[in-house]
Image (cartoon, rainbow, N blue to C red):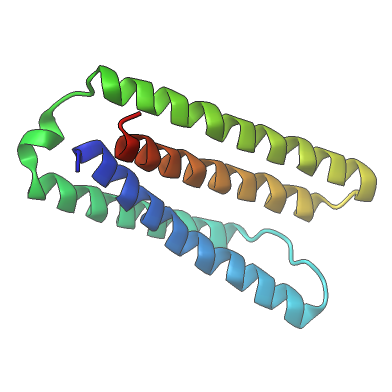
Length: 140
């Protein structure tokens, strides 16, 4: 498994864990109150801190396990894989952004617009990591 594939796996898992915790807390708080809660800056700061710390730890661990690969630059294959994966994740992000804007125009709910756009950012990044993994596995 190449270093970049390991990195994609780590980042996929690292992004999935805090995102799941964040959105489950939004869901349960909203369900308890009976309406969608507004985005919370302290929760978003905590989410970001957890995400950054887990990313640093994960990337450090895979770099320590194969320092030679960690210091090697991206080759042509890596660049093609990153480009293809980014291409598909861009469609997901664009779809989510347009969906959020249409929802806002129809229902005028700013909090929902925030969550749709935020969710689209996360989902598009998860798709990018999954596409990278898939392309590395099949040899692009």
